[in-house]
Length: 192
Image 1 (cartoon, rainbow, N blue to C red):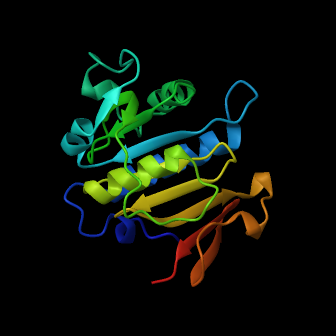
Image 2 (tube, helix red, strand yellow):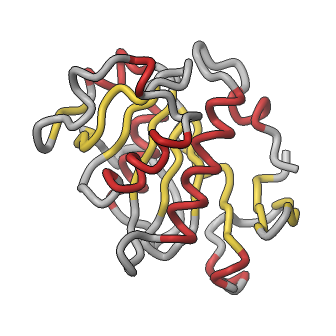
Image 3 (cartoon, rainbow, N blue to C red):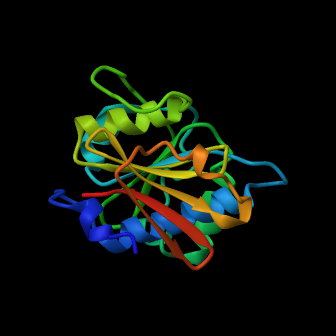
């Protein structure tokens, strides 16, 4: 099984339950899409102060002004709201404690010193860039229905919901890698 402790590693502010809740939400978004279409989004977890400094809102923040108690990523009602907001362009910023601080954020990204396979778009560059420059972890939902996890500027895991029956050729993590099946998901991680 994927080790959320391993992904969080020595991060300043990365609770494994928050990462796990975020990844489960990302997998739901990848499977379900919204309004009959596939959507992509980005969640940046932890090191929220630096992440906010390296990003800006694309539109008025729909989460602004709401109390923290009503923005917990583990709350089922909030999760449904986040699925709706995922249709908007931009990233979600999630505190290490599981509060969704902001939505529809543009991440100021730079592809300098970032290496990952061709075919991944700007959302992935933003994830790699922000995790390279901060202590955050990023979870990307690709419009191809693959969930990718970035840490320290690198792609470290891919989750492919079996419902989409994607072939192994779509996996961007090169060998050595570890593959596991959990429930109806295939999880591919970098072998350490």
